[in-house]
Length: 375
Ligand code: NAD
Image 1 (cartoon, rainbow, N blue to C red):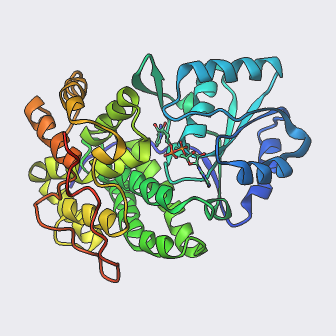
Image 2: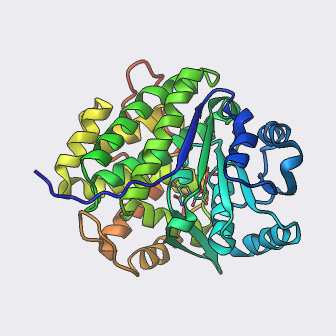
């Protein structure tokens, strides 16, 4: 029996199809009336749906939310919010838009309603990652946690398949790291295992038919569960490495998670065998790390850092940054270990070796990265 302490985070969640129509009521429910609407690039369709639902409640709009939440973008958005005396932020989009909303709430205390359109899960965490001068740092606090989340499955149907895949693996990464966090507990464990199983089941269906609303709903619910896991437990090696690669090497967030996850799992496997067995069980595969790699490869996702523009010459400096500050992780984090991990991830090697094994019913699509580009 495990003794534990668990503080659940108090967000209000509205989930379903067509739920975006509720956004005005949710603003009124918070006794707010002057909305700053946050959107981002490629979000015209979903932002239009929200604008129509909010109508005259919108007093200002900012469409420049940027990945990794650069503080100079936050400064510009805050100036706009103050100029228009907003009392509430409604953010529609992925983790980048949510991150900007949280950064504004952290500075000015605005109430937040988040309408997620990816599977990043940030909307239910009290965690904010921000980038200043090329270094990404995270902080956590109750003022960062959004008041209300509106999940509308319809808004995720247009999420392109490559983003669908990498974002779903981003959610899976939250669940995986929660399972071996020292802060985990049986409630979080069951959420994490449920999210991993549902993502493994639903992702191939959505990749084959992006309009399948039931499978999309499963992914969105998994993102919610996985976000809860991330919010409740701390981050380990995988998230710290991805933050380093994103903040200091400008690698895209979800694709970086997708490439690193199997390697971070392989790194920790011998130090957390029971967790890896639970993950393998949830995925119905013999080996957890290889199983995640195979799922990604079968669906045509990125499997090497080389594909994302990272160079072999970056490995040493990324290693130094990744080991600069200690953090809890099942296996001790050493420079040599991280260099090996990053080299394997750069080359796109399958954990445990061998060729990627296609999942049942999946086409065998060899990853483009098994041959690393010339140095
Ligand atoms: P993102 O928000 O940058 O979105 C990626 C791209 O997809 C963008 O161009 C966006 O406009 C587009 N997009 C989003 N939804 C779409 C849709 N439905 N249809 C078409 N295009 C769409 O990427 P992300 O991976 O969701 O979020 C990454 C950011 O979130 C990073 O900054 C990361 O640090 C942060 N994050 C934070 C937490 C946390 O708890 N603090 C958790 C996860 C991610």
